[in-house]
Amino acid sequence: MKTGKRLKGVVISKPIVYGNIATELLSKKTDHTHKWTVFLRGPNGQDVSYFIHKVEFKLHETFVNNTRAFKTPPYEVTETGWGEFEIITKIYFPPMSGEKPISLYHMLKLYPPESQSQTWPKGKPVNNFFYDELVFSEPTEEFFEALTKGADGPEIPLKVSGTQVFSLESEAAECKRLEAAVAQVTGKYNEYKDRSRAAEIEAAKLRRDIAAIEAAQ
Ligand code: SLL
Image (cartoon, rainbow, N blue to C red; front, side, top):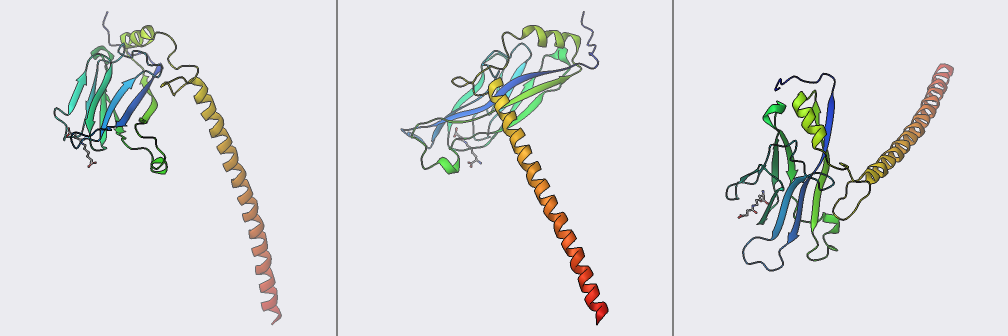
């Protein structure tokens, strides 16, 4: 029965990967310099259409028909062009979910990072994609059922392989890096706190000395 009733206190999140890959065109017949693909998919390359109704990519207005909509996967646009711009990816959920669409803002990258531009091998693809999670708070009963029943296989791969660069292993490694950074910052903070306390003590002592000298005059 379609009730639209929401499940109190339930939060469910779905991992996604979105972004673009670009390669330089080696033979340029027009002013187009790159071929690129912008996409939205599961981090394991898996189908995410069981909880998505439609995906819309809004390209720069210099493109013909610049809003490209897909009701079925793959959710991706491949184009050729000459410039970088922001792409808005709007994700629509099934009507029974009662969820508003979510917009993701992605900067299309065609060129390697500045620091690597001299050494970048010709024709090597430039990747610019991100891991994120769509969070559904108090989903409707029907949407909850779709979200939980549709998942097939692990949602996040255990290890990095090929183009699957987000994994539980890389997430754990990033946690370690963040913990090390926090420890380093805390260490520095304590070090500066000690130095600042010592300087305050020294300043107080100097103020007392000055007062004593002034009193003696
Ligand atoms: C820039 N602000 O100047 C950006 C705009 C637009 C890129 C980039 C169109 C391709 C076509 C195209 O690549 N536009 O003509 O179909 O860098």
